[in-house]
Length: 83
Image (cartoon, rainbow, N blue to C red; front, side):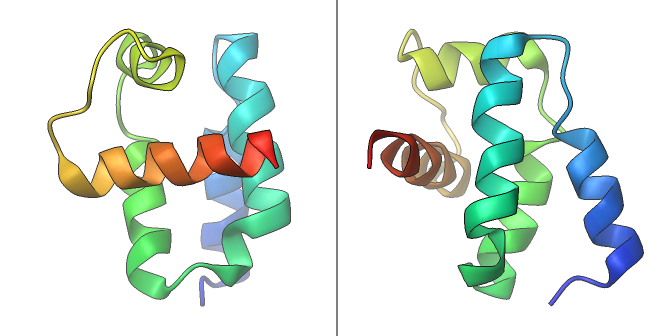
């Protein structure tokens, strides 16, 4: 489990320069982050280090992420939105 400071930084990192990303990332953290395994949480944290244009392309389906762990996390977030 992430310590409170690390989780607060993670939530801050979810605030991006694109509204399309903001509406995906922060609600996911608030609703589903605690149910992820520690490894998945670290993958999500790594996802937030990616550039906004890459994230946008992956979430909108314009490109496929080459990293399998990140691609799985993108898929997990998108599934959560569709539910």
